[in-house]
Length: 293
Length: 236
Image (tube, rainbow over all chains, first blue to last red; front, side):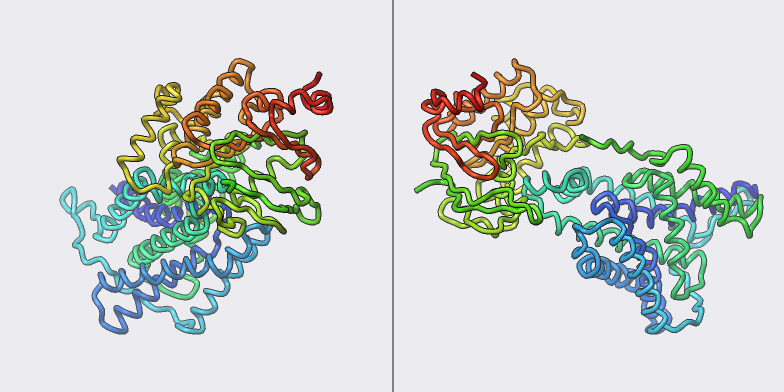
């Protein structure tokens, strides 16, 4: 029974990683850049929910909606100010800029919200599910997290497959110039991708902080890095890859913590990344990159 | 008035001047061939017209309007389509999805369906393979897809960059036959080709580009009999 409950916790944590990983993987697919500030957008989303719920006494739903809106706008603004001018720059310049944006967000949060650890209020009020005569308890947060992940994945896949904007995203990710020849506004499509990724980061952040309720300006960094690992694990650029990578990573982390060592659980996660990169550099569902001559 | 008029166009790659002030015009209904050796600036010229590259100087007048400063994604809805060099189909998307993207700027669903039916009629092979990923098509089929995709925008003028490149002689025949049909259906064609013989055979007029300059222009049939053209481009 213990194993089962660890597994369920792992899937729940993995669902959060998967939602964050979507942001990394979509932005990478379209803009061919790693947005290392993505993790910090999560933290901003959490502070919005914390301030409105604990400070202003808002309900969970309007607080989360506001947080999604703020993060979406933040994502668009970051892209416009920091990344768009570097569209033709070397990947290294963009990467360093992304790290700079990440530090900027963390320190801005430090300035605005202070360094104190806040205890986050769980936004999920769903009662826990007791199975097998009370031997197995699944918390409401776990259920909501997993469901949110499934719904988001399905909605996103549908959006990309069925809408014009989604098809434009695929076209841009494959060939920017050819997409432009079709009349696709490449810059607007990149903006849209950042908007979706950042909005999802807000959702992921709220779910993460509901399960692990401590909030500091650095809260987003670790789940951000792990979700990035998940994205690479699953195959960066691939949306189903983000799901598989995220869930696997969450399960590995929780099982590692339970059965091997709680101090080593992060190390285990990153060791897995190294092994995957050695064995299959493109990740589980990643495409082999062919250099066309 | 010419449908498309390029005036004193200059294009640079960094400090290197690729196009050195060329001028030419395309009239409605014509097939114009732009021929020249590798590196003469043919592709650069087309890419500048459709906004993939920015000119340093000069004008590109399309139906009386200078489009040289208009963002590339807005040009297709003005009635100009570009079949790029190397086909550039979206390999991860199906044939059908590629064609739908060709009509990206069009709104009327019924009209899009009509155009799609017409494209399928011109390229029956594409209809047979509409659910197949474009990356799995043969070179000739990809070329047809690239052309069909361009036609989906219902262009007034279509710019084609080396449509015969890398294809077998039979497919080259087929592609040129299709270009003729496109022209016959009333679409103006600006054709860039290294296969000068074939290009001149279907063109009304032609321009010869050499290291960024237009060195010769005139009636395509006359050009076929021009001795220096024969020597340099027709291999006779």
